Amino acid sequence: LKHLKINIPEDRVLAKEISLDKRDLIDLIEKREHVEPKDIIFVDDMLPHLKNVSKLGVKVALASWGFTNKENIAEAKTYMEGVIGRKI
Image (cartoon, rainbow, N blue to C red):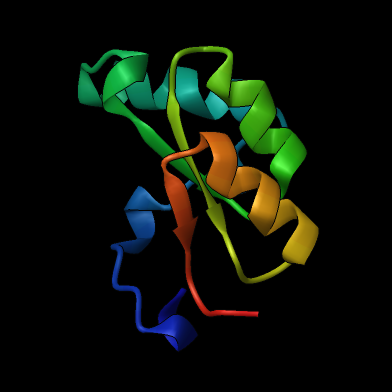
């Protein structure tokens, strides 16, 4: 994120070292921040991850960097909060 000039404190970024199941990360955020799923925006570069957590009522946005492509971006624009990051 730093190379994209997105400044998020490291302790606020949840990565695979915590859990590979993104639903676990949503649960952690709910408990740590005392929020409901509808108050969370989950950003990931993998469309299947976003589809999975969106079922929990979480808002999702596709990160255009990393493991995504133009087809994923086009699909994400149809039902997600949006696409963030660099253009591809």
